[in-house]
Every structure is written in C-alpha cells, then in structure tokens.
Length: 387
Image (cartoon, rainbow, N blue to C red):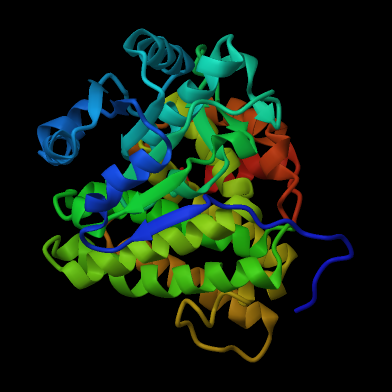
C-alpha cells in the first residue's frame, strides 16, 4: 500500500467525546462555545423515547438557557431545513445542538450555516460553496451509523424529490461530537440494522475509493471488523451493551474514513432510490451494496479482495477468490440481520429504474470517487439484477 502522488488532507470534527455517560459532558462543551442561548434540534421520535428529556434535565441543572425545535423529519427535504433555520433565528440561539439520527444532525448543521450565510438550503448545495461558518453546533447521535457528527457533509432531499444532494464544507463540522452509546440502547432492531449497514457501507466504499489512503483504510478496516462481529448481536439483543458500545465505535471509525476518502456508487445509487421510494438511507444502501460491489469485484478484484481479511473471509488463492469471499461475507452479514436485498420488496417500482440509473450516473461527486466507472447502461443492469 502506497500513498498517492498528491498530498492528502485529513479532516474531522475537532473534539470527540466517546463512551457511556458522555452525554453528561454536553454542558461543559456548550460553555466552551460561549453559549448564551442553545436550541436543541431534534425529531418527535427522540422526544418520545425520553432522550430529549434527559438532555433537557442536564441543561436545566447546568443553568443553561435553551429551547427545543422538534420539527425534524426523516430524510429531510430542503424546505424542512429552511424552516429549521428560521426557527433558530426566531429563538435567538447562538449555539445549536443536533440531537438524533443523521436527519437531525444534518438539519442542524445546514440550518446553522443558513443563519449566517443567508439564502435557502438549495443555494448552497455542492462542495465548499458556503462562504462563512455558521453559528456553532454540537452533534449528539442517538443511532450508530450515519456519522454525521464527524463529517463535513450534510445531506438533504431536493424539494422536487428527484435526488439527495449534499452541502459539503469544512463549516459543516460541529465543534464537538458527543457519542454516548447508551443513547442507542432503545433503538429498535430494524433501525439498528439499517443504521449499522450505513456505517458498513461508509467503511467498505471508502476502503476502495480513489481517495483512500493507508490512513483512512486503517479506520475502514477497524470499522468493518466490528460491524461484522457486533451488528448481528445488537440486532438480536438490544440490551447487549458490549455490542452497542462496539457498534458505536465502529460508526466513529467509519465516520473518519467517510469524511476523508468518501463513498462511491453505492451511496450515489442509494440517494436516488431513497429520494424516490422514501425509504431509510441505511436500507437503500443495503439494497445497492451487493450489485455495486459485484461490479467492482469484476473490474478491480484486488481492491475488493483487500476487504476479505477485515471481514473475516477466507484468504483465497488469488484476487478473484478474495473478492468473491468478500461478497459472500457481505451477503452473510445482510442475511444475518434480516434486511432485504431486493428493490421490489422495498417499494421500488421497476419502471423507475432507468431514471434512477440516469440520476445515479449524474451524481459525479460520488461516482468519480469510484475505482471502476460504470456506464449508465451498466448501472441499469445492476439495478435490474437487484430487483
């Protein structure tokens, strides 16, 4: 493994607090931002499960003034992010806490930037388009998978629901990430499975990305090892705290590699499918993983086969054997947690597939990070095979 011909940059959130009980450090980190008024941005599910009440109690006990915006919606469309920015301004908050899954954190991060940059969410889509930092944010995940707390990109669904797009900027990173695995203990099995597969896709896609380095592959490999071992356990028994802790750590490792090497075709395809079918992001990624990795195994078997060892797959005699062992291990993981690999079972309509292929092919930021470049027709073949 060698470094590429060009210098590489490694970025992530400057402060990570990890471990059971980490949430109790939130007031101290808010004080370090100079917080006068805090707005917690979350969703109704987090409010209903008691996590919001726990955070409210912490801030009350610390004497920190705060409000709550619980209007985040899953797979947030851009108008919902605009509405959150309006709520921040109306509240007068000078620090935002994104509390929840990826939707809550992404919404909080973009909305905080809209407060200072002006305009609407769709004005700032793309790479390093934002002109100035937003008001400070702190991200507190309640699922183990999205890694929004550690990356400089936040994802929304376009208002016309034709695709998912990202705001990518160093200004998206929160000031701190508070990762407390205890906040994931009440996550139901289906959500645990889907979010865990999101982390797995972050690790596997970034491992073979053209932007990967030996540095990022270390994190990707560690993430893969833990997901394969602990995700089935966490799905089978949500009270397995060791599995919850290890899965949260796997998500962190995947977040580090995601933030720097990036994802490839799986995410490009899943964004289009998720926007059209309105299915959870981790489910969409799972549906796309095997077709895309099968394509890559044919074109770049050495890269795909390089994942066999961290996946615990047999070390075959050659690259093709190791690539096939990698695919078999991936399928075994998906089968073991009870997720589907068939697009039709997820509500995707067959007549959507040509347009999904076209939109995927046009998602150049992600597609160009792939070590193997499919044509639009080859993308359609992958989708048909997964139907």
